[in-house]
Image 1 (cartoon, rainbow, N blue to C red):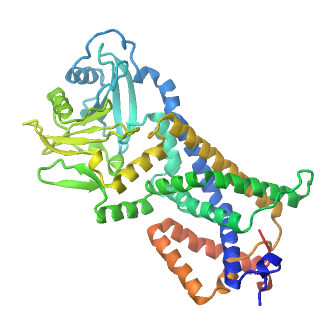
Image 2: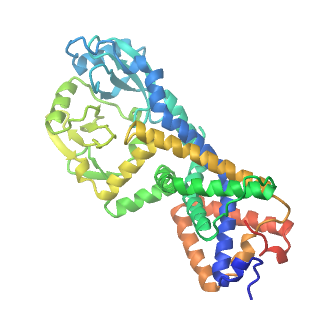
Length: 464
């Protein structure tokens, strides 16, 4: 009854044996076809994880001052904004201000520049004591990343190709978790035996590589799953579905409303995509009083941002310290009366929103600072090595007709099992559309490959 050639497979029920073969084949396809995307995401992600330290060195002049121990009281924010305006060669509106978070650091005055891309701002870095201009840089997003990290970030997320380029990173994130769990399943039911190091045959080399690949995958498993899950929150389609689900369940990230009588629950990435240049900010004469009101309301983080309101809007003051413990409270302040209209505290976030915030910040390497960044770099290097070993195994094992095709294996499954797999695949495809479309493409490639290279009688033959 059982058509498998190995003794181990012959002892297993037909369905279980077929499912094992299906997992092995799918794992191989993911590695072969999606592997390049995962590899590039790991490479650029590793570079991104290392950029905070590089930025401190490259942009030291803009980020730090020479008057950390001068004892001179810092100038008011109004004076610092005036110094930035005097320096400017264009009549631009102030969109936000980030006061110096500590002695020896600069204040960041951000201007809405119509010539920049959405999400970008022209930032003038001011010494809060001497009012000297320390830097003039383009910064990006709510994190205010500097040009080096912005370049690597865009390379990592979309290959510098906008929304179309985001398909690559979503493809990598959508399949990474399945590849990791598939590898775990293969290790569990088909552990690779140790091979004598003195054997130099191609099979021995492949088996040794496979064993190293499996052990490294087990070591990195939790990190791989975490990277995949948090990476998908940044994706265009799966991420949108995720935040729609959070909002529908009342678990969205709460945000202060800039209008009276409303509060909103928003995607934490929404501000990351928005541009201050789309507003016409008001004057900033009251900004020092606004900061004082926000401090009295309990915003005590060193890192804080004051967002200048547009017409008919309130000031938005928010903490921007995403380290541990996270300080991301925010308040809305009336532009005339300067009373606090609304406050959102991180401790009042729904648990899913807190986990989302922590997951995103850990993925960016800011939650735990340097240890977080080193861990991400280690994970990235580990993924690069694993994918490289996977291609080495494929190269050493390649031959016409090797391996099992998916379609014959699927046809051997009982109707109930096949229906169950179909429902799971459909659900995953709806939740992660890029994965769903790529799965259809993968099955099409498998069918063409089988028709051209594998006789039907060989569909059940071969092993990993």
